Amino acid sequence: MKKIKIILSAALAVLMTAPVAFGAFAAATSTSASKYASNADVKAYQSSIAELEKTQSELKKKLRAVQSDRYGAQETLNNVNSLILNTEKKIETTKNLLDALSAQITQTQKEIAQKEEEITEKNTEAEKTHAKFLQLVRAQYEGDETNILSVIFGADSLSDLLTRIEYMGNILTYNTKLFEKLTREKEELEALKTSYEATKAELEDSYAEQSKYSDQLMAEEANLVAQRGNSVAYLNSLKKTEAEITAEYEAAKREKEKESARLENLLKSLASRDKTEYVGGKFIWPVDISIKRISSGYGYRTYYYYGKKVTDFHSGVDIPSAVGTDIYAVQDGKVVVATSHYSYGNYIVVDHGGGISTLYAHCSKLLVKVGDTVKQGDHIAEMGSTGNSTGPHLHIEVRVNGKHQDPISNGWLVQPK
Image (cartoon, rainbow, N blue to C red; front, side, top):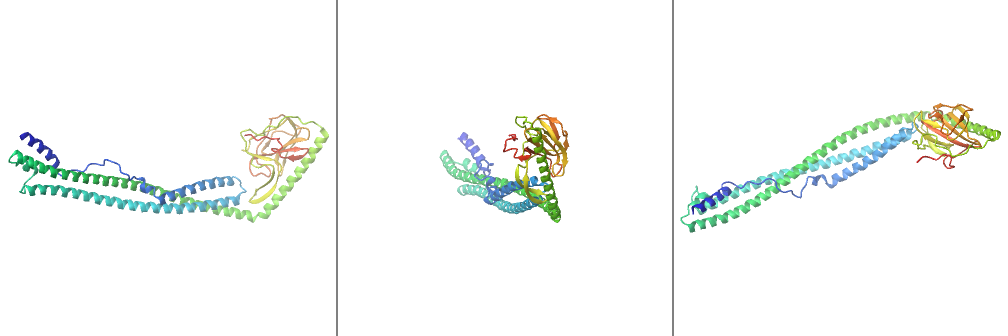
């Protein structure tokens, strides 16, 4: 009997001397910190910003390409205006995103406060449950000072003890299940609160990041507006001299045509007088094969001449690179022209026999003179931007009996892959 009492009293003392403590967070719930961050409105705004960023990146690339040509003033202005419009859309979309994030932060804060209230209610309910349990015991066994152990130890006989234990066991089972239910509910509430707090922190980080981004956009817009002012001023200055530019372009065009006609006559004369055969073999590429790009092909083209849009016939192909880039003779031959001209700038003509010749224009430096014999691959000049040129490049022509031909389509030059 004594042993039974000791075992029962130890077990009951642990369970009943104080309200059952709630456990720590034990299991994850279905609610995650990304619940509100993936809100449809927020995702839509973020998607819009991503698309606008892509558009802006493309516009900036286009703007840089146009700005590399000092004659593209109107394109520059158009691209700046497009960038400003794009930036304004991003600012508006970012503001909407900030509003959506702010609303989610407010809602999450309300959820946290609500869960805190519910947790407090569960604590209060648990305390009340324990108090009711003790009241039931006291009601069955009279006396304000009655406790669990005194009820058990107050048994008159083994039969009375077993009856008391059974009664206390029933109450204890009910009380334990109730505590387990309250504990589980509180753990769920605490898990939700933890999740909402994580969500709130995530939203606040996003809000801070977007606020910084918004400030950057405002600064970018101000810079673009200033750039637009500069572009407008430059364009206006070009428009003021449009008549002068037109006259200059027409004069350059006439000079080039005159020089081209003079060359045609000269080369025809040389071909008929010398009666030499073409040296034979394929041409090589006139610059290092790593320089592959052709910026302007043979035939009619449209471009900007000091802001004026013009169309003319291009008698060769242009290969752009840095000033000083080596230029090579595409085939063996004899230098028949090495001079400077208003339109071609510093240029060379090499006669390859059989009425076939090549012309190299806009050079910064000529390394050969009239009468020199050159071999295929000889370094004959350096690239530049002399004469009527929009930037450093080699203008190369192929002429047959003085008349220019398309160097690419006729197979004279093969562009590297």
